[in-house]
Amino acid sequence: MQTPVGTLSVIEINGKVCALNWADGDMSKEAEKQLDEYFNKQRKVFDFEYELNGTSFQKKVWKALLNIPYGTTKTYKDIAEEVGSHPRAIGGAVGANPIPIFIPCHRVVGSSGKMTGFSGGEGIPTKETLLKLEGVL
Image 1 (cartoon, rainbow, N blue to C red):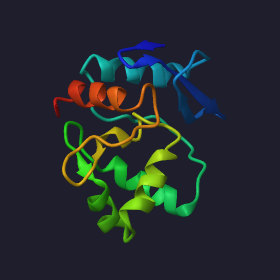
Image 2 (image 1 turned 30 degrees about the vertical axis):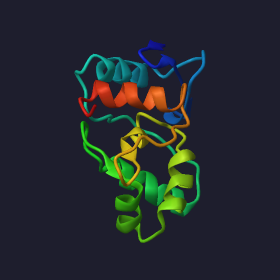
Image 3 (image 1 turned 135 degrees about the vertical axis):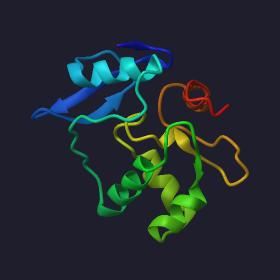
């Protein structure tokens, strides 16, 4: 699927989304539909089934990311306080997010509001594009 942040493909196993990649490939029709709606500003929350593979800590962080509303950001420190951890550990879990955009890791910024790393697409420019789409920047 062509998007404003590059070519995306979604991996689905047993009918559940489990990964999003910046590359060509087969895509779940429902995930594609919802991404299209997101990029056309018609969707703010994704609601398809997914299955995440990660540690219990990573899953706890990813769940916290799902609570960051469209059009807002939180800091790594905010997330650390929510889950009882350290901002650096949060950064590692955020970077391991298997379904970026769907789990909005692009909404996490540094304590000063500074753009920090992003594992998808072209890194920070991709993160900035997503935040501009949501009206944050």
